[in-house]
Amino acid sequence: MGSAVCHQMAERSLLFDGMQMPLCARCTGIYIGAFFAFCFFFLKKRMGAGRSFSLPQAILTGLAILPVGIDGVGSYLGFWESSQLMRMLSGSLAGSIVPGFLLMAGNYDPKQEKEEAIYESGGELILLMLVSVCFGFLLLLVEFFRGAGIVVSVLGEVLIWGGFVWLILKNILKNRNIPYWKVSIAISFVVLFVIGGAV
Image (cartoon, rainbow, N blue to C red; front, side, top):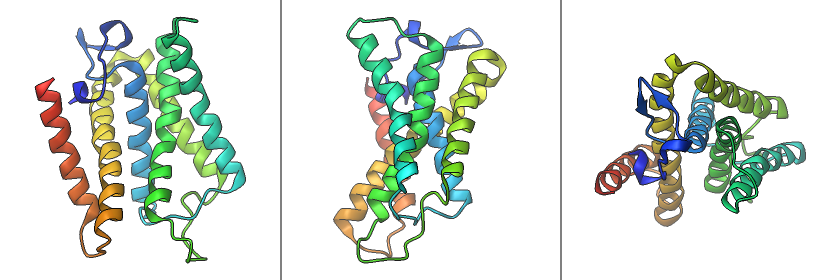
């Protein structure tokens, strides 16, 4: 399933038990960040939240995306060769904020004044970023944890792409009786599996 979304270059990937992980270091970081964010929203019962970010939260999310953009573009253009550490940490930061954007895009309703906040405080957002970055750092340092990293990153891959499918279905169908998330996750899994198998 990793080949459906990742270049899987060996020199940019981590090894587990002598074998290459299914996603490169940056993609691993992105999808573990997304996994932890979705777990956070699910456990906090905020999958229906849609209130826009506060100004400090918007600034934090913008800052979280900058490292992956700068490092990715700079290394792609040949200005520098990025390290595994930078790939993993910049990916983890960026991945941790994408689910919040998906929820805001799918649940925001300008007519509702009392919508539930995606993040109750900037502290929640910072904690989520720190958990993602720390898990990514742990994967770099301790090979033993990479087995869990494989599972978490692939689940994050299914969840984040399921989030995009959810956003599309919710806007097209506009029927509140459909279990959008379940259908979206199932579609995401099948599509990633088929594309990954075909590549």
